[in-house]
Amino acid sequence: MEERKAVEKSALDIRKVRESFPMLQKKRNGKQLIYFDSAASTQKPKVVMDKLYDFYLNEYAKPDERHAFSQETTEELENARKKMAGFLNAKSEKDIVFTRGCTEAINLVAGGFERGLLDKEDEVLISALEHHANIVPWQLACAQTGARLRVIPINQQGEIELAAYEVMLTKKVKIVAISHTSHALGNKLPITQMVAMAHKRGIPVLVDGAQAAPHMPVDMQELDCDFYTFSCHKMGSPSGVGVLYGKKKWLDKLPPYEGGGDMTKEVTFSSHKLAALPKKFEAGTMPFAEIISCSTLIDFLDDLGRTKTEEYEQQVLRYATGRLQALDRVRIHGTSGEKEPVLSFEVDGMDVKKLEGFLSDEYNIAVKAGDLSAQPLLKILGVKALIRASFAYYNTEEEVDIFTGAVEEFIRRKG
Ligand code: PMP
Image (tube, rainbow, N blue to C red; front, side):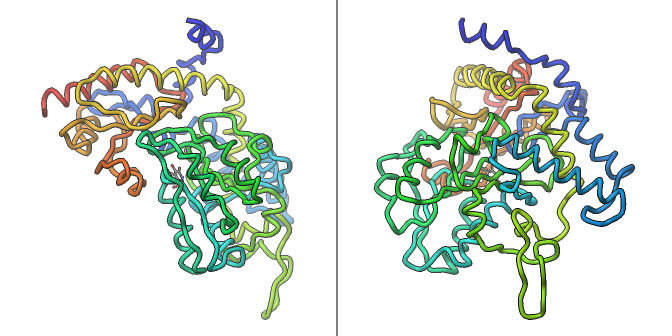
């Protein structure tokens, strides 16, 4: 009761929120879109796309030139960087490197480690929960250097085995790369504790925040991780923008993995001098229009209130969990503890890919089914495929009712 009151006091104006997202009004065969695939990519608020459109049509110029529109672009770009630093409570905007996505941000760090910070006796630790994007870059780095990739184990609820992690943190470990929250199961990892444990031994930590930054306030100074990565298209921006936060001491040490224009101070045929941070990592023409539109996105999210959107999403998650748990033959995977608004489940004896198709074709409900880019995790859990409903602050309990009704109908009709 207390909990419900707290939520009501800070309730979002959900009708207004939904009006900000034109895609949510779309219908197919008379059925309104129910978008439960936000962990893959979110829908876009109109203000953000208006900014992008306006920039391209009325303000467009590449940054870093002398002409007037270019100077304005440069200013807007640097403002976006400052705003992103504020969004993450980073110490300085120089700690913010823009990338083309979370995948590129992780590859940037793994590629940098491969070029001088990893050797053949070394180890890299990842967890069993990771997305392929936080596995394969490290496999590539290890293959090049001869270093060993080790995996922090989990239990059947997908919770990290902290005692095993403690034992694995030896002098050989050069970096720990773990997700903040699991994209496949929703589990929140005990990240502050895991960072502190690694730091006690002087080991840096990269946190893949692709599924955390869109859902809760993230504070780099409090988290104290050395690198933090995410994709802005999973929180409302156009595609093609990602962020790598890095502590200055690590960004200084890390060699760039990509060369090109704009990341150097001086170039001769035999050598080059790197530009200062963060430019040394931003080779070539960046998606500057999309980055600038992220400024508008952060204003939009700030206006909604991050604590409010988080509380609202948790309320939808609790409601959906209760409704799904009540269905026969449905088995939800993942922790019963704290999690992000993600529900991944199996339906006993049924093909979840067929359920995914049924939900789309009959109800215009978008979810994701399959290996969820977590094949090693699914192997540990002993499942071939999962179906994932992932929520955002623009979803409603009424949508959950239609969704669970549709799942129930599928089981009845096809079972
Ligand atoms: N890490 C996690 C945890 C993710 O969920 C994703 C996207 N599903 C990524 C990394 C990769 O993000 P992107 O494809 O936007 O680079």
